[in-house]
Length: 166
Image (cartoon, rainbow, N blue to C red; front, side):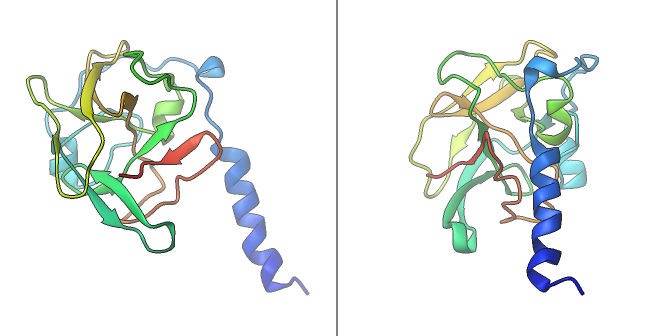
C-alpha cells in the first residue's frame, strides 16, 4: 500500500522535473504580434503567447506564501526568472519557455500602473521575438505561469522562478 505522503510527493517531484525552463535549449517559436486583448477576452493567460492586459499591477494575499504581486485583467500571480538580469532590457525566457511562462505585456502606448500595495518600480521592455511590451518590476521582466488557474494561485514557484513580492 502506498502512503499518503508518497501520493503527495510523487506528483510534486514530477512537476519539478518538468518545470525547468532554459532559454539556452529552447527552440524559438514563430514571432507573433501581441494579441489585442487576450487576457480581457478570456480572463486567463494564453500559453505560449504574450499576455496583453490590464496595465495595473497590485498586491494580493496568497495565504501561506504571504502577499504577492498580481496583474492582468484576471489579477493572476506574476513571477520573475532568475536568469533575467535587472535593467538589461532583455528577457531570458524565449522559445518553448514562453509556453509555460507567458510574459505580462501591455499594448503599445500603455504604461503599467502601480496599484495598492505595490512599492517597486514598474516599466516595460520591448521583447525581441515579437516587439511586444513586457512589463518589468524593479527592472525584471514579469511572467505568468500557465499552471495557475485562479487569482492567488502560486503553483509556479519553481527553481529559477520567483514569486514577486511587493
